[in-house]
Image 1 (cartoon, rainbow, N blue to C red):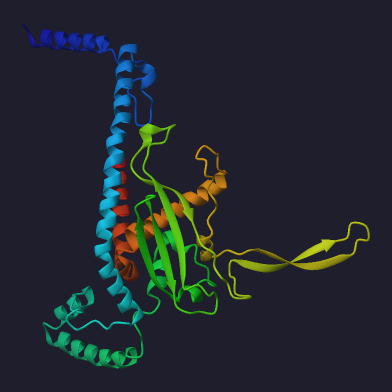
Image 2 (cartoon, rainbow, N blue to C red):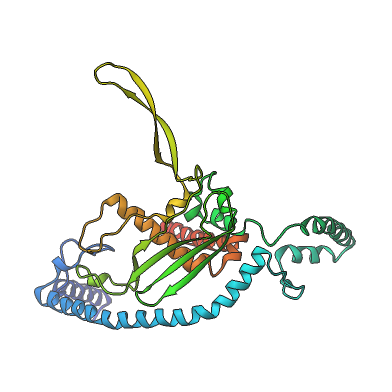
Length: 345
């Protein structure tokens, strides 16, 4: 048989195969996000439904796994506390680390070592040591690491926009942020510890997050593990005239009959980080619809709480130095590069 005939037969065979494919539909290939179900033959639809039912049953195993994982996290969290407590002592100046404990290489020190390989480097190294001696004599008066947590919060884009200029003097008294995992009901609590200050009498401000580890009744296929669904703040005991979450404004009032005008003082909400401790209330009934604006506020709040627990508290020093943020930005840049590469193709 000739090559031409072979090609013709092959082409013909390919056409017949395409015509015989039961999933062939007029709209062509279904891309990401398209619903393929309407185009499926009835028999295939039934089988797909069976797979979905299997997936729902599979969530029982997922639920058990995540529940036991949370219990395991609670167990090991207690072992992390010794390191968190020592970090807190160093930050507050209650403990001065030894030379051995401070023996950790940094990028700056590596640069100095490279320079010291020649004469110019050695001269600079001596000058650096002399300058360090002057700085050290000044730093002897410093206690711990000033504004450690304020710097971390301001370095975190998710939180920095919440911090207003009038919040910063208060947050400079923030000496520690702690997390405690709660087994039952599943959740966690954040504690913000403050040194004595002129704004409020609380020494600790708390924020509790409750989590659920069951599939949604109306969307069981969307289950991906525990999720925050409720949070509770605390009452801040503000000193008189020091509440930064409110402000007094003058309102103009006009008499309806006489037309006389007067000005009255009215207390209104003021933008502040400390609204974080008074989140919107979530209805107990999960079926109750929540206002869209409140829902958006809660979504952001849950994201911040989760971020503080999972990222900031375990790796606080890297958020203080900004190294953790550089790592996160590196991942974002890689994503952008991948997209541009695909566009070029």
